[in-house]
Image (cartoon, rainbow, N blue to C red; front, side):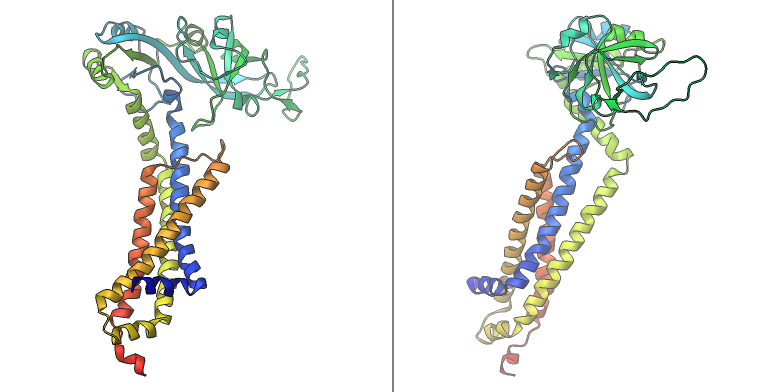
Length: 396
């Protein structure tokens, strides 16, 4: 009987394709939107993942996420270094400052100062050079993407004349090159190399230099230590070490994974991104339910005479319901597979800095639950018509 149900469904290609298409649209919208959301949100904690050597991040107790540190006194570094289980601890300075280009334009940049002695915190993928370039005076490493977009330099030098000069930024420009200069808080910074970092959640040029140079560039404040990066000693549990640091210093210590989660959920809870994504996903579910349920209902309605024959021959309501459920399950699983495949194909081939994509197991499970809802609603609407069907109608 189940084979008959399948043959009935596949025997009407138009409605079969319509039901599958409805589930496909539902699955695709859910999977693609959530995968793009995950791809975008994983950029929010790129500062943490770009420094894989650090097991624990130590910060001021009021810090909520990675992009807005609260400066600590320099003594915090020595206090952390003196705790049992710490293999090494190094300082990290981060701050958003304005850089002035040779064209006269200003551009906010994220200035990152890494440990002078070890250069821990410097980018791993440096183009045609190494982090040791930071040893040279006034040298810095700039992210490669911003060099061709936000930090473009004028081809011709600006003409300097006495008196007031109106700023003109309409001239032709070129990408930032090694040897070009930036002015950050009236300090000269020379581009020594470029790093391949990828795109951050907040699009902003990133400039790496040494910790001592970054502190000198930053406007004078009493405290300028943003984070302390900690490596756990061999055999030491990172989570246990973080709790110990918090207890002994009063500072906030989080493992790298915990700090990534903190940053992720901060953006989820404080921005409207989640609500927009949820609305699109909801539209996908409603579209899938409406289209699939309607087409399966029409298909069942057109085949009522065949179901009446089966009931007249002795088929029970449960058997007929099983046939309708099988049809809904077949259409749902086919549409689900095609939707996942389409989303994965488009996400893989169209993936770029502007179109992030990361499909996760939880996304596929959520999409499967939505498709199950589509199948249940579709089967329920169709089954009601079949259950209330009088077998005698076959003789009319």
